[in-house]
Length: 181
Image 1: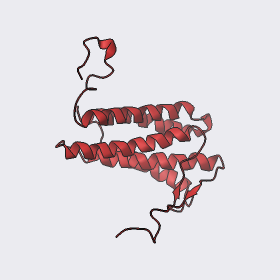
Image 2: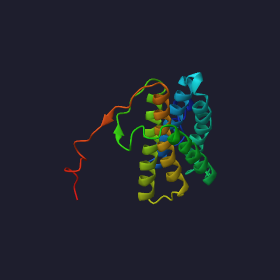
Image 3: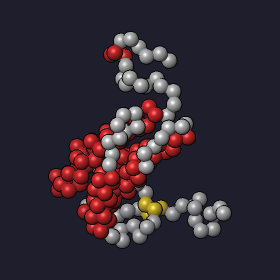
Image 4: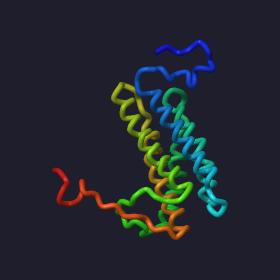
């Protein structure tokens, strides 16, 4: 494929690249969009979550450019995310007892679940980039892992504040008797 000379027909300058870097940028662009959707759907009574998402959305775009451009995610960003995670975990202590739950909840929870998955996709794409010979600053996958956990904690907070129970999930694949090796 060739890039069109007509800029109206070019959505992103690197969209026709071969290799995994552009895919990382598309994944993190989607992550940023899902955070934006969660922001716009966040009820006023969840001002703390809204404020945190307002901080996280630009960080998702900083993550986006941190491989092709200058590294823009810092240790301070990870520390902030982990501090917020601790606050939300304390609020929901014992909510899931470490078990798996089905990803459910009323708006904006579905977008937070999509953001959580987007953070996982970004990590997996960084694995692909590293496999292809690219260098991944260790701060980036650490940040994405913290994001994933933070989005999940936010979901638990929203559901708890709305008096909605989590729906437990018991895997038939990974139970104690079915695990391999």
